[in-house]
Length: 398
Image 1 (cartoon, one colour):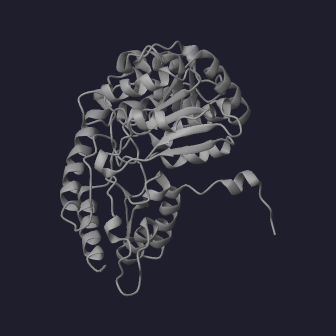
Image 2 (cartoon, one colour):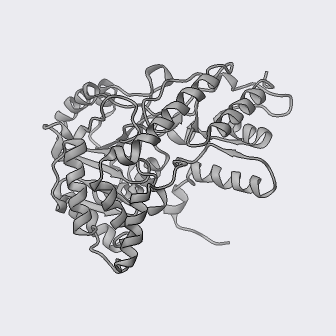
């Protein structure tokens, strides 16, 4: 018997990747699976960005770069932060990584010690809790529900803070709920952290450009806490560049140096060609790359919400960003079709996958076990067919 490390045993497989794997297995057996599980835009990278990658190859950007990224990319990111987010970072305060996931891991491995606590507003992205565990710290969930638009309050955060709290980590727009925290809500949250100067705030803004509200507001703009905010972003979602693998942070210089040190021993720099493509994206007006995609996602959101709201027992909020709907489906817990009994969201996801070949992700992986995550990063035809299958299959449960 092979014995893996205790560290590995503490981790769970990514729920989204596990569902994707099961979907592929069913597809390979000839089943017509509609996969609404992965968080990947179904758009191609814009031509002007792809051309920058091709040019980088032709210009022989095929060698090692500095661990934290090419100077010209970090300068472009610095300008992007100032232009889009009103955040002031020098290039030395920016570290480019192989995706925002690595950025988050760098932060946690740089700042957390065993038994430190990290506050996670529910729902949260699946990898947050596992990355925190990898750093030997403890994720502490702060609950929310569809009834309060999946947002936690400043009062809830204050109540969850203990002497062991080291970090607060959240995303806005949120994966999986699509909720967007307003300037007022973030200001109230910042007032809580004013009382606790040793707590760091990690703001994941990867869905910044897929935002259906009037303003994306970065918590790092708030003067009283800005020296403790690490802003995480990347090109995967807003620029449809998931496979290019470029994420980045902006934060206090000493934290950037710490992340650079960690990264230097794990992966070194990310792909030079991808960095040059990302530089082109950062220097462009975001509207050139994101407007069509955002408008399409908004139309799909409204179409899918209309279908889901006509399914008995499915309860939805109205997501203000990203490309997910996170309905409460707890109405079906305890119900059965005579063969299968639905005890939880995991059961419901497997019931739908195995019986009508629609792949969703259980909300238990995101801290809300009463929900499922549905990605609408798919064609209108697939979304309409999926909603039809879901409604038909759920109608068999009594």
